[in-house]
Length: 461
Ligand code: TRP
Image (cartoon, rainbow, N blue to C red; front, side, top):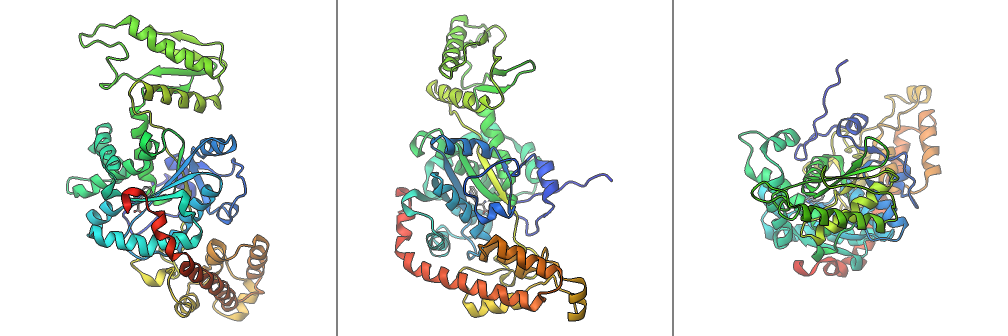
């Protein structure tokens, strides 16, 4: 059968959960072949299921080099459990040594949802940042900023517009003639969000990882494409052995790379650029370097695929020295969406589908009681056939949010499947766990409320 294409739309209220197909179609990498230090429950349970270039970040972490984490929040509705998954990942990266930047997408929220900047700020602080504090982000190592007050983000968003066009937006987002331009601008601002931590004023060149739900992947594809298009030096696998480096001549660098306005080549300039590249490569320890200025290429025969990142990094630094932007494509991780309580998509605009972080215990209890279950319709049948934990919301929420112990979960899973645990019992177990979790969270929230200001970057005060 001809496989249908999955459509990922960051603004849609429906969402594909065909994760295998998503991985294939969009070229994400599986998490299976990575070994993570101290994996969190989201990693251990396969909830964080895919990534792009996460190995670059893990390598930096391993060797004690700097890396950053960036994510963003849309200040419109209330914060619910689904939103906490990204924060759990941010916390995990923070504990591994990453510096953390969080974008409040107040411009996006204003343009696409009609939320005023003032209201957006209030929602961001009371709904989101207050919960981040309670979830355990470290205020000393976290910088929250607003899109509307960080000019570097807006500048980059505008400037990098040059590296894309409407056809690409059509291909990535399905935009058409009647698309409101706010929807065209918002992704460009998000490109600015994602790339700006690499600029000198915000920490300089280092790998940046963006943990998101898979609905945000179109933005990452766009950003990664744009970043690569700005690069002056392309690094790729050679057809023969080794790694091939090529020059990308652009308006910005033509003169510097020896392309004179009259079309002639300034051989001396070309030679000096090639000499710089060769000397940088030699610094990395390569001795066999085939420099071919006439062809505009350099081959490092002994370099392996693993060396490519090192080389890329070095050449981004060189590009910066020469006046280029030197942007590294961002890494990313993707998590599965927890199913909504009702079985449909979880959404803040449908309170029955989710648990808000400030819901009281009473409503949490009621919501879980009414939740979609994977049990059979009669007890007799349930005992005979067993329940299905894969679609049972109570079980799923323990797995996603409330239960730390893998072995206890495994026990619940098998006893549900073999009919020993009934649907109502599973719900009660979940209610007890959720109650503990929520009570603890509310207590932490009260204790950490005073820290909210400390999360704010200087330009957000
Ligand atoms: N567009 C994101 C959302 O709808 C918010 C956002 C803005 C974001 N900038 C970001 C997310 C940068 C990740 C990275 O939730």
